[in-house]
Image (cartoon, rainbow, N blue to C red; front, top):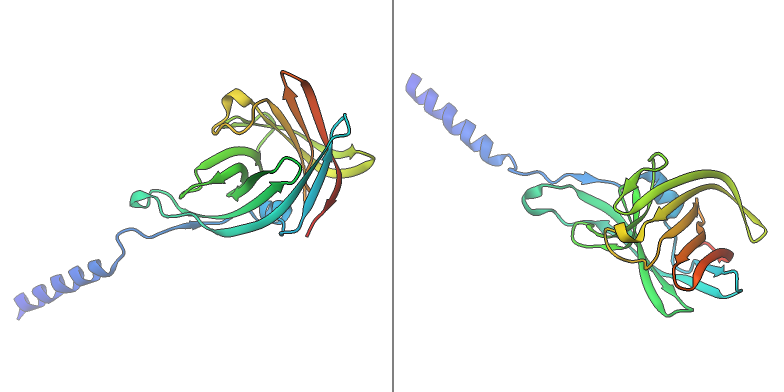
Length: 204
């Protein structure tokens, strides 16, 4: 009888072990501040103007939300993402902003969210570097074409250190919560520095 009890206990332990998942998928979510401040709806648009009075018009065509795929052998979490798909009406170009974790990638994507050049990151000190992105100064307010924007975060791209080459020259971006990019500077080594400032916008 004692022997039968031991056998029953072993069978029970084996059956319980089989019921346990070998690898449990973990999920991570977007930083709530990033999500609320830099995720916009389709129909939003931004019009920029440079020193020569040239204009660039950007429209948010649509957006996608979801989670990245599971890495091989579950070595990474499935991450929540938002992909904002833009069209530059003036130049006839399309690109995206890929929001994941606490950063934004330019032309991001991929099965695990591995693609794209970082252009913005939250909660990092000034001069922090991340794949060609350098965190710049925080500015209380910034006047752009006679309009004042607040809580500005400057981000710089070093072109020859990019994780994914998206920009031909060094760039500075000035981000304002709930607005997006209010100013950007392109350090064109051929035709000179171009400063683009937000002239008009509509946020949906």
